[in-house]
Length: 512
Figure 1 (cartoon, rainbow, N blue to C red):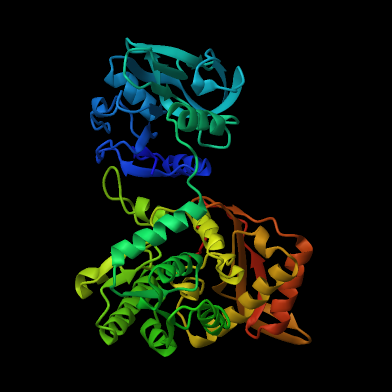
Figure 2: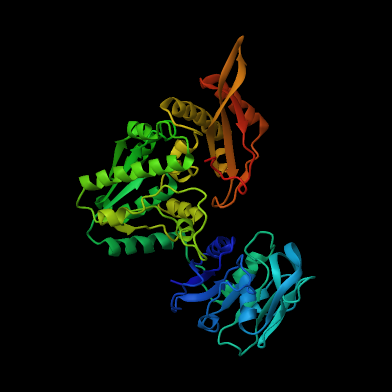
């Protein structure tokens, strides 16, 4: 299978480069800059990402570029371009003025395949404080901006067996208006990728691969009701049939009627699945706990305990199935030391070592939108496939403060009204994720002639591609008014509704 290799130097945009390449129906992988694999024949090109580091620093992130240059077409983006210039004898210095934002690229090489079909002047996005002030011997300029002389360059003919390109702008961001076309020129024209990596090909290849990987053995898997685990389970089921055993846990923190509805959907899909009612167990363990990290850890620990019990009840299983997707894989590897933990994620890490289970992760190479395309190819029920993302700890992190069955009831009722109204107004599919949050705030209200002192719920709705960044959804005022009225009139315990208009960053999508 053809692939593009992206070497990550820690840029916030590295995943975006990968997403753009995948949009061309070309498979790509991100690996840390210091873990360069062998350049096998299936690697058609290499891209060096940007970085928060400077090549001028003592602790700059460096690699032996001679292992890549000339072996396959190479593109350095921002820091990657500066690293190329510095490594081969050019000069990088700190600019008098940090170049950040939209600038006009003046390209000088319309006959170079890199700029095929690109305007002579094209808007691009810059984000750097260093700049290349002298190109190395054996390189030539392809474009400049009003403030930097070497916005784009390449190796001269004969310098390397394969061409080496460098650009100091970011073609992967939407603000670079022809950036996608520039990347496409590199990936399809220069690297020669065929662009035939589709959902249908992925399904066929993955099912055959799973059959070989698992053989005649059995897989156990915990399902969440979400898109990722459902699509992963469907692929496994297509490959090994009833040798896949699944279970779905009711932790008492699901949405209203979700346990019954999702279980019925799974059975309708032919999955070999069992429901586990563990509501009281979770409520007891969470009693009096308000700290969000502690809540997450308790919920994660209980899931592990239940998984262990299910595994012990089915001792003849050799594999653990997981719905891990590519962002999970990427974010678990830091290119320059441990990352800051914003919040711990609910997963079942550590189980294979303890239970001697091998891991199988059919979706570990896919982004969320690609998972949905694969699910559609597999004819997964739209009721599950089009569901909004839902956090692993469930309503446990949408109830701020301690958790009680009564608070869960209030939130389930309010959230059901909100989600149903989104569907009724045909807004559900226009929003990437929506949910209701129960705040630890009581406010005074008036109902009839009586004074009330009840809780506040916040409505959250965001638009995003993959959850890495998110913009709040601009829902119609008449819709919000109707939802607010419906909740206050029908959910005992709530007398005030607010709407969250925070973006990510600086806020997160979930409140905890």
